[in-house]
Image (cartoon, rainbow, N blue to C red):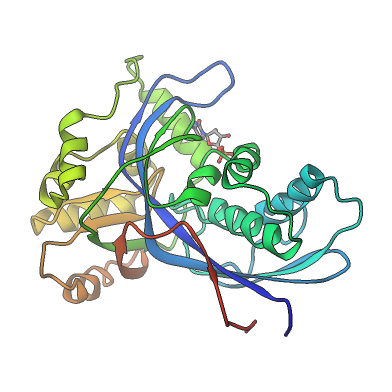
Length: 302
Ligand code: C5P
């Protein structure tokens, strides 16, 4: 079909996630390191008189109306550009887990902003798309920029960090998801009131040196304890990796688990073995960092 824009939008993990006490606006201040990894949702945008959305893959049952973040991204971009008549037929093939702590919904919103910016020839800058993205969700700006970024504020304030050596991970998704607000509420219930601490300097040095064993060792996720309290399957999976001396952590607010592969390990054996845990939905062996949103040329709608 002519004029179809095809985008792939990457999932994110948090290599480091420090959380401070809840703010008056209900959000939590973060000191985080985001990284895009090679697990993608495909987004197709074709010319049409009105906005419509269909979803395939692991998101077949998602709502496709105004409550979908991709649809909201489309309307927000049109409003920002002052378009009075606009439309697009959107189709998303989902692979990023839903309610998994990998910013799947945010990646779709970021991908939709980039796709429609191109389809409608709006020429909005990446900064503008990030500002719009922040109105849709805390992780959307990161999903627009991608790569490896230090995140502050509620996650929307970004600064690129160099990560010269790619990391390799086994991503383990769970059959049951977790609601992000619920995990933050559990964090509040357990909170000691401790102020937010900046990302550890030694961790940043390890990241910039590409020292993955050190990155894995110094990584931290303050949402892990509350998430594991709410999700026995994620706890079992983390324990399974640790019993095999494989560093593993939950991604974002969970329950997806990321395990760090040693150099030279292709992860196939670990992925096959961990998939036998009954709570596990899928496993993926991926690298990071990758681009956040990529426009694919020469591809067609499915
Ligand atoms: O920004 P987003 O809409 O993705 O956030 C979803 C929910 O996650 C928020 O309503 C809030 O409960 C929680 N959240 C938070 N602190 C953040 C990001 C998200 O408390 N920094």
